[in-house]
Length: 94
Image (tube, rainbow, N blue to C red; front, side):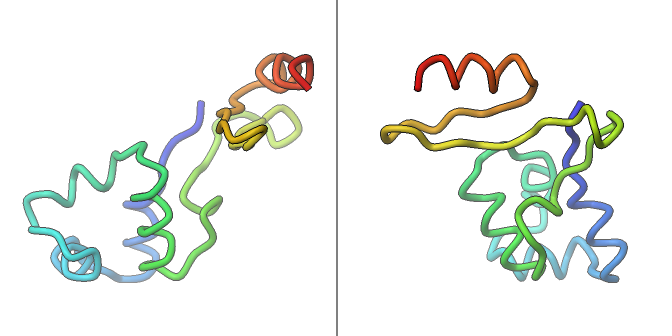
């Protein structure tokens, strides 16, 4: 399973939720929505605001050799790849 680690990054960088809200230009009440978002554009904004790579926002509980996670754009469509099976299915379309 892939989990967002934005809260962890905030702790690592010593950034309070109030400061994070300011950085993101949102009300403090909306920070928890950001901490759990699956909106790619918001996640890209979060990564930029925190000065981390997009991929740093995620952690997998699977061993590294088994973990597959990402997004692939093919012919104008974006596909989320969460498993070897997802990847194989996308490759069949190619």
